[in-house]
Length: 602
Ligand code: ADP
Ligand code: MG
Picture 1 (cartoon, rainbow, N blue to C red):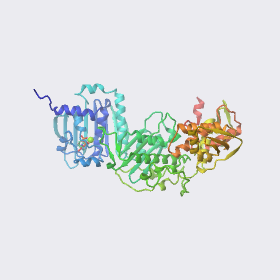
Picture 2 (cartoon, rainbow, N blue to C red):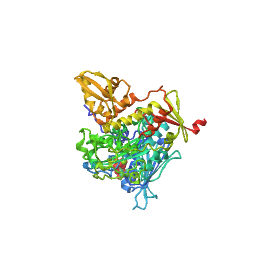
Picture 3 (cartoon, rainbow, N blue to C red):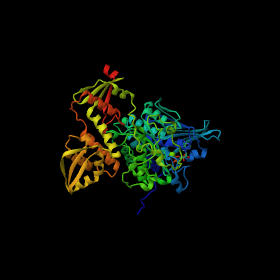
Picture 4 (spheres, rainbow, N blue to C red):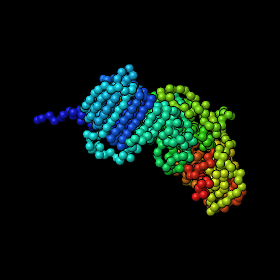
């Protein structure tokens, strides 16, 4: 009998392994750019032809390589970044597997030119399909230039699987974006088929976002920053009103590495609460710095997944940080942190605990002006290395606690509507009035829903809902389960102005109703509240209150097809623009549109 097991030749093994690391031109772009970053470059230029199918070139001004290293770097498991297994748990650089260059060299024609500062000349190496074709000395500047030609030239199956040039270019731009976002202090350019696509100057993160996505992002961004002794979160989120229908601009990094993490993504999305319509997505650019020992990044060949030792803790801090950012933006009453367990001074131990609701008594900053432009410290980009710092959250959060802003939404355009005395009702559903720049059209039902929603939230918090006594109390008869749910909700219902008396274990008499519910069927209203409570059951007190306020608001708001007097319209518009969030209803729908003069001309 013959033995049948053979060792594959290196070149074949390399080709197979290459498939794991390099799936398309964009993967090579990512690896080369990350190497340039690791080499300490301050300027990195990417030049591609035919979306990298015919050529990818990365030019950096980093540390360069010695003649020997230039040869070595193409060997599998050749890396300058780790030497012991323990190093794996302390990785700060992008690379560490030492496979990228070996993989690329296995499936393309590669030219490397590199020179260290201390060397007089540089080294040039040409390698094709893992075979060194030429090596020579070249005069050049300090740094490294990799030129990759004809990716997959020797793996036709893969080459045939490449997508259209457009599609591959999208992948390249995406990788370029991920790398450049987290390195705003470094200059980058991207040139495609002779055209400059991006020219990114060194700056801070905000400037980098604007460089990548457009200068109109200036007004769209909200800074997020939260430091605890275990985690440091830094970056920007996009204001709710600029949420998009596509899941585009969602960039989440861990130690500056782009990461996909559905659970943590949820932490961010969830923090927007009811401010974004169901079919829209919030944008964000957030980095989490953690001690490398607290994560495991080595679980995926392309390293876009990560395991956290304590993912719940990260979830809570991330969620709270995003909420805080939104809260500072509009100081809306829905940002009610006192009941979020994650906001205790000791983030870790408080997780999962739910405290009874108490109205916090926290010092406020009387000088805080929610409409003042962000001062510069918030705009600064994060530092690269992990610097644990103890920071008592209560300092940062104090402006959110209990503080009421009496200032209406700072929108001079819409505020002006309130002093205008011409109101017109269209189709008994829309209120039309004029503003400086054109015509304001308001959905009366959505507007009133927003007004009531904010009112109810305040009442829930301040326990001061007004009650109106029922002359003929109705009975609310329930099954055992529902009766116990009502019991759960009783304190909140009372805060809103309901007065319920338990007649027997399953029956309550409605003795009083919130004054805003005067004249409506209070039993039907309570049944509706109960229904929604069951559908949206949540362990979070905050979510329960939001849910309750929302249900009440939707039920009690003026319906479409209701005639309003001029006075009523004016009142409603005044109240709307006194709201903290006048733009969107609790279900995320836009409340009004402004048709500007240009639109009107057309
Ligand atoms: P890794 O990045 O995981 O170490 P690579 O195959 O990407 O593995 O690179 C191998 C080695 O080649 C790196 O560890 C580094 O020492 C060297 N190297 C690669 N690219 C550059 C560059 N642009 N400048 C300087 N050294 C580089
Ligand atoms: Mg690398």
